[in-house]
Image (cartoon, helix red, strand yellow):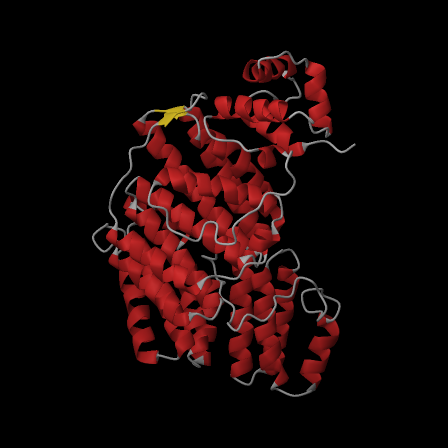
Length: 471
């Protein structure tokens, strides 16, 4: 008989099962017994954990009631593993919630559905209209929510530090190995630890810190889902992270989430929507005092405009990015999470824009700068910049040099589990097909054929989405 991991996870979240293996089965048995008005022993609990489903409806209700009482939120039988696969609305998470409590409940449902591999969400495409609705809701709504938790578990400063450190660890793994590497582990952390903290007991001050870190962790989950090619799910995580940021009045954090949504929209070929999302981020934070954030918002707008071929408007946005970048003060910037946006990152953005505008020489200059001494050190960022450099040389007619650089990029990309990497490879492949079967191309194809990222039938190749790759 297979074990009931859903029940075990909820018992751990409620404190009835400990991570170190110690158990409180008798305590849980008494809690269930109080709800049912009858006696249960720890033997019953072991059977339920082992996979047995109680035939008695009263017992099943008592189990969910005991868990709900400890967790401070409703628990249904499907969540416990007693009702078969839960029915999930395909629209779950798309709407921008009116109340933050509704948003938290939605997030909890999304995390659980993600772990349950609900295909309706994992295979969902991005919803185009939802981007506009979400950005408008954020722009016009400055209302902050009352932040205080009335659950059973007391949340303190140590919990906040633990949440922040764990998110930073997953962020490093994402940059070095791609979103597909540890995405599920992050979602498990969100569903178990973060959900339990949000349902806990905390005053306003701790609650604001908790919501900030929860929004950051959810944003990372959205980025990793996007990088793994789960676009509908990523969009939902972005939306709910944005609602958490609004609840504490953090406009800069909210704008950075819109900025990320713009990034995804450009990747998916929705360039006009992407430009508008970046503009909304800038409009909502022009007086917030973060030059680093504004520089990045301009850069995202430029990336979308470059794909549209609107050179004049793209040049204006690139100039805005450079202007804001030059006046930034990283040591005194309220958007500290944009600290990674250094000279190398700006050069990479300008390289992408110039490549897409057909300015191959400028693109190669900026891409080379981005790989210089100030490079971020993130494997995925290095891969993207190297592929842009290869594209630029190919556009200049330097096929041999382009192939050498692309081969370097493919070797870098072998360490990554990223659907976006496959999209970059496909764009280079399309450019290469226009060159013809030269000796340099033949030699490259022979060497690249041993690398999975280049192999046509490799599972990591990104499917055609009607758009183009974005780093």
